Length: 467
Image (tube, rainbow, N blue to C red; front, top):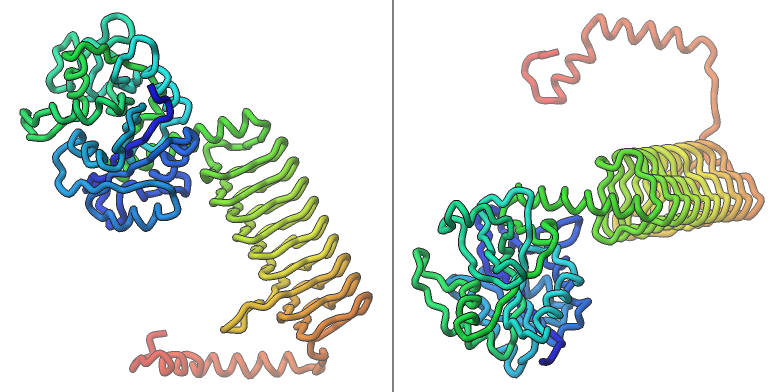
């Protein structure tokens, strides 16, 4: 038998329980649409063809998955899972090897599990159908798979139709399977809709294959792999399950999580060994953190690279395009966007760095901001190596601060500064002796007369003084 599989992903369901205008399978888990999780796993099998069966809001899926090498088949009427698979027949014409049948709202099936299904299908006993089962902690209302004491399937029964003895069986049906492509659509053509729902059920091909002398079997997966998502509540449960797994994976790889349950990862978060993550940190998509870095509490990172030995936070925000080179430090209430902090550079407090290149070992004092946007365009700020920017300075881009230059605190810098220069750009300080007492006396008199209250009421359009 041809061993290169084809894959059919069923994604035609309406997803009414989500109560959303977004297609159910496009809702994200760990920052990635759930169907993208599944298709990325499928891609590791190098399938000969991948077909996604779509229905309502098919345009959303066709747009979202336009960059993937997949075909689409449309199920115009919702007549059951067996009918849905039939819609892919044209796209799989000529394929006689294994066909893996998956669900777009069951996104966490591992590539290893898919390979296991294909390998079992190709065994010498030629079972014809391999059903993916699981043994949950709570079988709930799942359909049961009754075996003959080995992996051979004796009977598949829905929970509502199962006897008390059958309900004691802990082997449950995920609905997913691998089937010989040479027989799949022939068997589906023999499925009837003689049931209460009037639908064509995919699992019925198991009994049809048995009648034709085949011996369908079951292989098992972890419960977390086969968890379906049909509602916001189930989506939250899947997110929690995925996060728990990712946290364990990170700690097993040498990452320290001070309070694991408070740290949230994205699907592509990369953390090097000996990284320390303090409580309440969120990683958005596209984050890489190198060895020995520390991410302090309450920080948010997205689309950024953090170099070896860097320190971020607490209460820091790294936005897309931020890159911290080795030993750089971003402190509390600092935001960095589309900017590079060179090796050993520091922005310790209350600072915004956007569209900038900060040289090695440069220091940005508390309250420094790069004024990168003029209302129409973004402009760059360049700060040379070993430069020192005094607190509460505004660097009005485009501007270049030379190496080892010093900017006095409170400056508004609008012109380039040469290397090794000191620049001060602030108004001259004046002192008016005795003026403070005169000011206080006049202010107290106005307060007594209620002048301020009347002006506020007038400014707010109030006819009466409500103050």
